Length: 183
Image 1 (cartoon, rainbow, N blue to C red):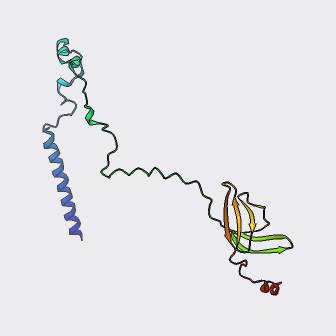
Image 2 (tube, rainbow, N blue to C red):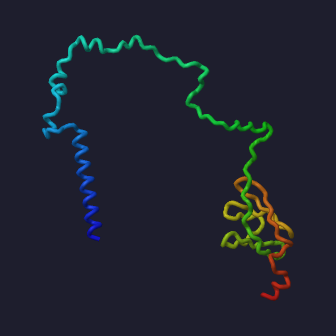
Image 3 (cartoon, rainbow, N blue to C red):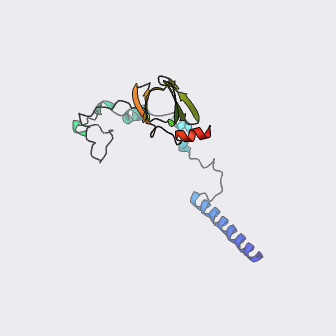
């Protein structure tokens, strides 16, 4: 175990020494002088201040010689979105947007009671139960218009659209004879 550690330490030390020697060789600075003294005199800022005006005039660009590029009209819009998919066919002219339709009825028919000329219908919506007579509003969204043996007619008030709810033959599971037995 100790030999393994010693061998690893020797390898790491040798790699470090080789890296340092390679860095010294690449820098080309064998004399060990200070890096600030090695800056060439040509890079000193004082020499930059004395630029000849003749050289400056020669180095200027003649901007009036440059021309503005002209693109051909065949190039089109080069930034438009391009796709290999064929374009979608236009919609047929006869199709008009459909008017909005009312949502499906969410009421469940529970039963009805008929006393004389009055009819009361028992409905369930989510966890609430309603007892409604024809002509009454439910939640400001629906109005019950008519009750028959097979259906109940509602009007969806925001769109003034009629909807029908089936009563499945007039009972919601119990027959009139079973109602008498449960009372």
